[in-house]
Length: 522
Image 1 (cartoon, rainbow, N blue to C red):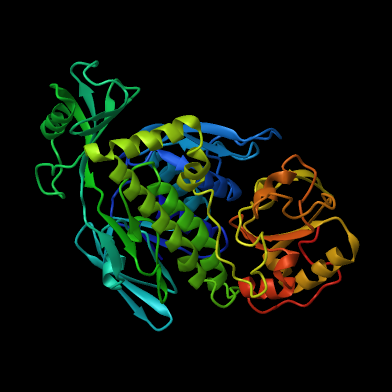
Image 2: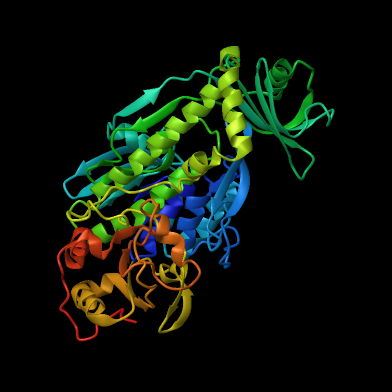
């Protein structure tokens, strides 16, 4: 079961159902939300979703240098986020409601059952199952059971509360308002980020003549944080920050928020898992919230499917927390840093000037670009012999390859959702790896590609992993062999030890006999 039918919950459901797992989604809303919450998907999220068959933005096919897009950090312009030329664009601008529709279509196509108007009230683990009580929209009740449950039910997660999963929290220090309105004087506040001695106002023009407004100030807004704001309150706040009267009307989707942050202390409690806002909440600066939740879903989906089908290695489900909780902490840390930089404190002016100069010169983007886009993510090693491997845990770029079946790319090879064993050339080593992989043939795909030459591995002056993009020109793999996880991260290379041991760590003990030519061999 998945509790929560938003983008994160629907993506988890679709990932599971696409691998043959029966899934039930319980959602309290009667209909999909049209609220334009998030509007940005960052690079690593777009790259991961492309490997799962979702087309969000155009995919590059060139062999040139990195492709960049301008972004901001703490409201300051100049941040340049880059991606390899063979990947989707650096930033995908798409409203959350459209993302939700996309995942809902995939979920329906793969057989997911979605029950709307079901408010979960109780979650209890009983032996090898989870029992859920829900209240229907008509007031009646229903009970459901499943082998596992994923709580993707938002910041006020009932699943988290019912399972008594503890959290680390950071109290709010600033307040913010957001809404779509029509300005009576269209020139009262121009599009862009505006900083004054009282706070910030961010303005974006919309196609219907309205503007999308966001405010940030150190003073508390009127009303309780759970009370919906009014257009008069938003007008007063914008007027106070800008120092001029800004009248507005025809409000849509007004909301209030703050920099309150939460991170659960574990993403797993037995057979219950948390994902998205149920696990982590932070100030929505930089558009990282939805991207972080969707990366949770991609990480959890294939692991939970293997567990359900009894093909998961020991500790595979625990690795979900080990890999995703540190990533969420990094997002919380960088959003808190951005809020600190945005404070209207004269003492911060030198620091703001310094960072603004770094961004304007391009030097700040080298660190902050990969951080905001999650492209700096390196997963902790899981193999006993992989401590010295520069490859394990790194994301494999979309390399153009020539196989026995013709030209292809890494993105296309991962569409099936299975592990991918890439073998450079022939020789005794490649034949040995084919034999070792035979017992897991149903869970992985074996593909031969041309060798890239003797310069495999990091070159002089390169950091580990820099060479991953060296083969993007289509010359083949930059090392002898790679085992790639369904989410695009490298699970093994020859320097990390025995392939058979790596496969058993991820996929458990071998269950299928070695065949003369293993299924999946190409």
